[in-house]
Image 1 (cartoon, rainbow over the protein chains, first blue to last red):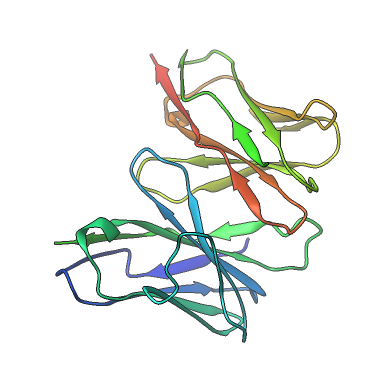
Image 2 (spheres, rainbow over the protein chains, first blue to last red):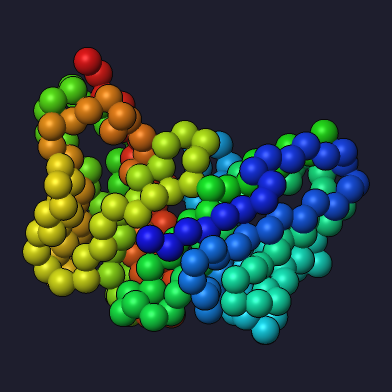
Length: 117
Length: 109
């Protein structure tokens, strides 16, 4: 089956620093990658959708200058949380869609838990 | 507007059957997904329905009624490891997933 990895799986950083999270599709080419944020006991919230080689599309209320997304290849997308603050502490999950299936199933990465001190 | 509703929490007994309901309102409906999410982990795919009817896959089955905007996930022979949140998500005309808040399923011995 399709495998998506994320790195790191968890990170603790100081307030004001930047953190980069990688999302890789290991055995397939992902035409589209999605970034989600999930706070405890809440549903997944879509942050942005990125297509390889083009700018990401951000959901309303998500600051594109704070959450930088780069989708440089069909197997790698990165999310950089710039000038992180404690309220950015969350579980960040990426997913990748092959675009080849009729229903574009998303395959999820294992998630990255970010804690900002 | 687009909306997904599912119960917040359900409790069931090991070995029993439980049905988790989901109602949705989605523009340009392109299917209904069910995912399982254990605490602290990412969701894992369970099922996809786009046509009316019941899809059975082992102990899990999923049902869809497009005319009613309704789906359910049926879990049989419940095991303790089935304790998790179950997320219902509909896909809209842009192939974006609209997520429900999830149903926390608690299994008791």
